[in-house]
Length: 323
Image 1 (spheres, rainbow, N blue to C red):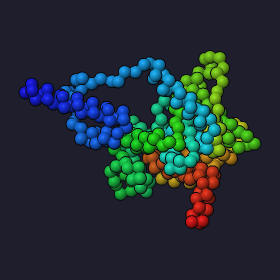
Image 2: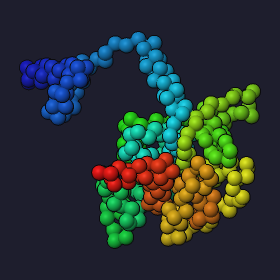
Image 3: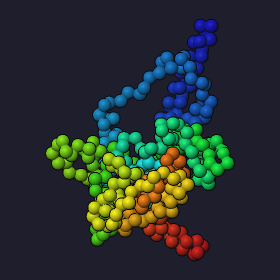
């Protein structure tokens, strides 16, 4: 028995050493080793060792990349404010266009908005048909009912779409970052004014901390319904007179609300598209409660409107006609 245990341990160590070496080389054999690897065992972990590293290496690895991202995205094609279900859905559609540079600004440390849970802190996510067809594209499994589907946990949707968005080379998420103001030139929204969220939340407890800025061709405002930082985009538009009034979100009516949110997703001011629950605050649509299809479809429509505003669809049609 002891001999077999030693043999098993040595085999596991050889395999893990080979895997680490293959990963360091970027070898295709790494995938094969992963797929043929034995199930995890105590023996395989007994002599596990990390590669050595200096603390300064960690600091430089983070700071150089983050500062490069800030430099690269200081001027971008699209800014999406808010990484809830609508904002992420918009970003996912824009990720299909690698030449379009997209910055997502999210005030929370954890993106996803309210889409980590269903209603009243319960797990399941209800999506009314035919929005479920988009779940098929994302590869998200669900339980099918006659007129709707149920994703077993809302976090499955959010983590799946987030992983796809973050993997896209043309998209950068700046989380723990708040939008404090808009850049407006000649009555057109031209970017956003940002700060660390912790600074934004404590302007009244310390001396003034000046912000940073990002310029963009289009802004998609997906800040959600009214709250401490909710509906910020349309609130600011009203304050500067680019929209006259904010009727606010009406009482719950699922059947009216979801259709209205998608229908009313629009370019609400030159250079700014409003999507998701911020639509209800801006245009007086009802709330829909714990159904999520409208957030997804509104985000997708916002992406389509953004592409149209950037002239991407017209360019594609011209190419198709020329071909």
